[in-house]
Length: 242
Figure 1 (cartoon, rainbow, N blue to C red):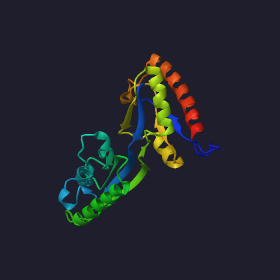
Figure 2: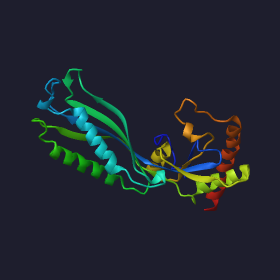
Figure 3: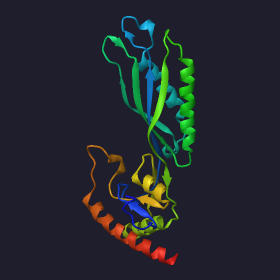
Figure 4: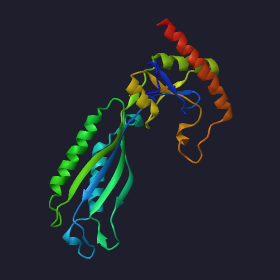
C-alpha cells in the first residue's frame, strides 16, 4: 500500500464495520508470541526420568497470563492474552519432549510494548533457572515474537474525525459515538507508518466480524454511502482552511 502512494496523504478512512452511528478511533496493539519447552524424551512408563514438556509449558503459560493481565473495568485499557494454538508430543506411549504454543497478546495505546516483552523475557529467564534440573533432566524454555503491530489512536479533533462526525450528524441528525476497539486493524499499520490521522468507519455490527452470521443491513449500507461522500467533501473543505 505504501509503495503505491505517490503522495503523502493527509488522512485516511478504512471501511470496516463500526456501526452506522459510531466512529472507531483506536485499536489495541498486538503481539503474536510463540513459546517453546524442550525436555529429554523418555518412555511413558518411566515418567520420573524426565519432565513432561506439555505440562511444563502449560505452567509457564498460566504464569504469563497471570502476570501480564491488568485489572480495569474498561476492556480497551486491559492487557489480554489468549492461548490460540498448542502442539506437542510424538506418540501415545512417549513422554512429550517438546511443546510449543501460540499466544495472542493485546495492549492499549498508552502502554509501552517494551514493558510486555521485558516482562516475558524475565519470566522465561526465571523458568529456565527454576527448571534447569527437573526430574533428573534439564528443561529449557524460549519465546519468539512472530508478529508485532503497534497500537494506534486517532485524535477526535483531527480533520478526518471532525469530517466524518459532521457527515453523520448531517445524515442521522445525531452525534456519533467515538469508540476504541480491543482488536487490531489496518489503521494501526497505515497510521503509524505514514504518521497521519486514520479512523475506521462503516455499516455493520463489528461484533459479528469473522463469525458465520457476519452481515450488514442494506439500508445502513446505502446510508453509509452518503456519509462517506459527505465526509470526503468535509475533509477537502477543512484542509483548504488550514
